[in-house]
Length: 286
Image 1: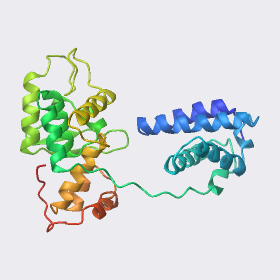
Image 2: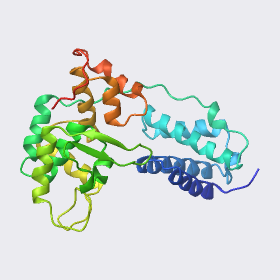
Image 3: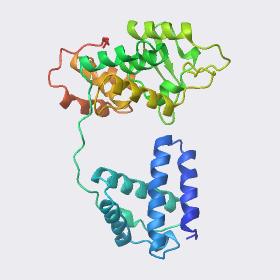
Image 4: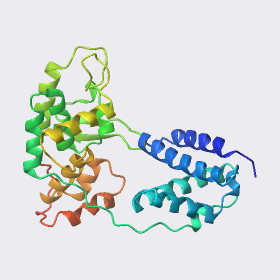
């Protein structure tokens, strides 16, 4: 077994996540979780990861609970810890994984937030004066693509009636249909898009890429303007799924459009769509 300090183990773990093409949000979240674990173990005067025990990990999670973290967050921290230990075992920094002996806390998954027709129409109306954000919102609603995929779109990805989605993090390349609403919103935006050498579809006035964090901030602003409460960017994707399930669109087709690796991921939405129409393979407009 090789020896490594807690700090070095944390740094190498973050590099490991990047090399394995984990999503940027996963890298940030897992990195923070393991930093908290490392700090806790340091408080226990433990300098090497192999010194950590099941009792230590349980004490760490108990501390997180006292600090106000939800059972869901604590469960994620345990997942982060287990991923960390898998990395440590592969690299022969530990021989045993005490995290496997720790039980996940019980919690109930919250239902996805699905915008009502009145809400997403109000969102459209709020953003209509801004061609760029109107196109962003329409694309998210009408295609169900992820915000990271949207930010990465280039002008050449826009076809007549489809979008080319490049491989993004661990998600595979795919083609997504573009309906009339999405096509019209894109056309309106492209006509006023700032002239720039940058090939990204969505750019700032200075010609730089419109980054994920800025798209998220802008969209959350329009959700507030539309007086839509307790909604986030990902809820537009949830709304896309629920709308098409309600209209009977095939689970397999929706799953392919969304880029889900398993149909079961899409299937879990069915419990939130009680009135499902006869199955069809035709996507509809919201």
